Image (cartoon, rainbow, N blue to C red; front, side, top):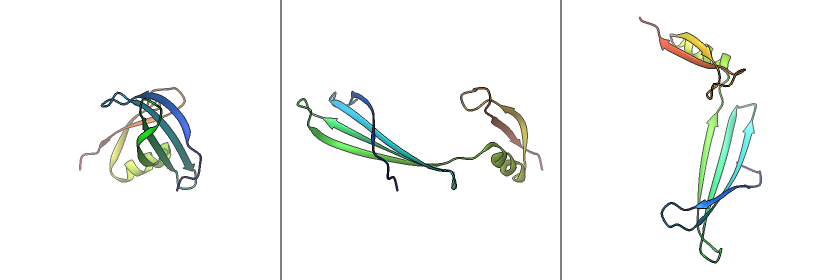
Length: 103
């Protein structure tokens, strides 16, 4: 359950109605369980600035560290072909590339 206050992300335009759209977000990370809970709130405004609708979207992710994922892949019969930068290829982070081994 998220207990943190919503933070303003941006003001944009609703793609269907053309009305102003405010986007709010909160996230909470639990390092013990490696779980990230993310909540987004979208508020649609009318021409006077009154809220006419809102939608909430939640997403829960589990982080997996490099050595943990490497162990899981190898235990499942994958061979690690390469270790590279993170998802965005920044140096200092690792991305695994793996293929299953032939039986």
